[in-house]
Length: 152
Image: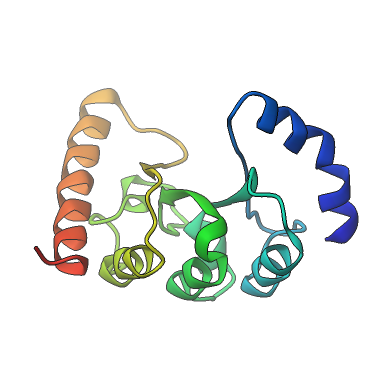
């Protein structure tokens, strides 16, 4: 992890120059693939321009808690995919369509005061009409989860 972060210095400097951020995605069988590796990243990363893009699909595939991964990433969480594990790669990857209760995830995002994007994501996109309907349903579900996580 130290070598990776050291190697990212030129890119982080470029991000600073252009007033942007770099979000590294956790991915199966990679350097950043588990909650423990997320914790190591957070402990060692001192650059505010470098953070984590959390893909719940990969955390779930490992059998780990997405809510715990969100809390482990904390303020270094820069981007969150609204995505869940579905081995069939169907629209059930989208929150509200698959079996996962995403309210705890939204509550964890609220707990760390996450202010970034929550991006709906799925692999193997179905036909446009089906995708549009699935995304609308997922969006409404996530809004409801968010309202419950952060009551007015």
